[in-house]
Amino acid sequence: MSEIVVLGAGPIGSATATLFAERGETVRLLSRSGRGPTGPRLTTGTVDAADTDALRAATAGADVIVNAINLPYHQWSSGWPPIHRAILTAAESSGAVLAVAGSFYGYAPGRSPMTPDLPLEPATRKGAIRARMWTEILRAHEAGRVRALEVRASDYVGPQVTSPLGAHAGPRLLDPVLRGRRAWVVGDPDAPHTWTSIDDIARTIVTLAADERAWGRAWHVPSAPARSIRDVAGDYARAAGLDSATVSRIPRAALRAIGIAQPQLREVLEMLYQFDAPFVADHEETTRVFGLDPTPWKETVAAVVAARVPARAM
View 1 (cartoon, rainbow, N blue to C red):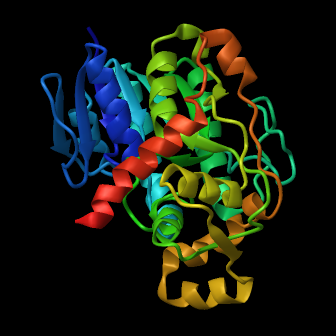
View 2: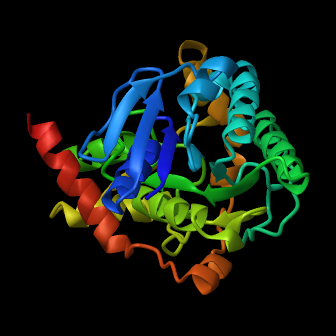
């Protein structure tokens, strides 16, 4: 039995903590709010992840530390550096394996299909932040200061997403579809895009954190075949028993205007390249080495729709 500390109680952190506990590990799910799922092997607690001393104390004795923190885009520049330093220090102090829930932001635009051996050549501020974080962690790993890995996923999808701003394929796409209204999306509605099941992210983190073959590098989460966001909307409609879905692109000028009042959406502008062209990931190596396959897309869609329909009916 291992002692696991998961940082961040959002969809990824909560799903990962729950899966670790289901597999018999003792898990502490720590976040600023202290909220999250609980169970016989799963407890929650509060911590300021930017406070090095507090985080070191909270992670003492951990065998694995999972960084599943998901800051709002507009907080990345100021928020990530101190949190990253504190987590790296905590991993060094505890001797825990550090598993990072990462993304594809560090890859250069136009590199589809993306593979984990691609160099980090970010074209955005947010991509540069994540690339710098992983580079520093990898250097610490190579110096023998920590044992670490990064699990990279695309935009996530799953019934765990409840916030209207929480995901591109979350409620802000699904709710209009269920009402028979037009769904407004960013980017080209017909561009192929990889979507990653939150359950598959959790399963990949749990599996790879315990396997020495995974340490010291990045891996891609197995994901269902790429679908355009128009395809996703249509899939949601059919799963809900509807004939079709109507999807239109939000004009770039409108995004800028909305961003004046909503900083999170303003930060989406520099990420539009991910939705204006194919944004497709390859996970073949993860499947070959660890035997992990993605959840069938129809199962993910059915779970998303089933979870949202009663929520809207209340």
